[in-house]
Length: 270
Ligand code: 2HA
Ligand code: ZN
Image (cartoon, rainbow, N blue to C red):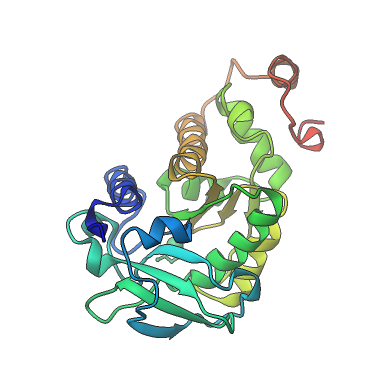
């Protein structure tokens, strides 16, 4: 059996957490990530018949029975993941009943997975229906994205349109736009359900006054989506309150969309 600390999925997820912390997006225990793993991938490093603990997930996820996830721990700091993966991360398998998680590795200090696991599992279920190659749900608190939710209308058409207008690459990277949720209590089943509902149409969901969720096939894809939104939000915040004498027009956006044959949300432009 190979050493799991050398597994590419651990190394890459730890590097991603470190990046997000260094960018200032994940203060204290802010943020959480779950990565869907294949059984063959896990079996190279772990005896999958050896269950360390059984932990209730607080949510029934029958569709995910037998699926393996690498998940960041509750109360853990992204800045510490790389130096101490075994305490800050866990590999879980959703049990036959769909309501429990079988811990196969990690959370060594007696900890458990992120309190946002229901939002993650519900979002995984939705995204897997849209895209069989989907693997990652990522949550973060990027500063400018959160700042923008205090000064910009929260309708997703307006929010997506403004982000597209802040940089010509935005409509290319997220032609589907971003979903937006108003203030809700984090860590609850309700916000999980609302996020997953938005994930039917969007790979990005902004939580007003809190942060963002991103979904993707890989850690880089989910990270890149969030990074592009945050970059646009920063440009918005840097230019907000100033007269924008040069702008990206709807005609410009349409020209971009046509040139790259983007499946963009036409109703967000007109
Ligand atoms: O994991 O970010 O939304 C801590 C949070 C909760
Ligand atoms: Zn959060």
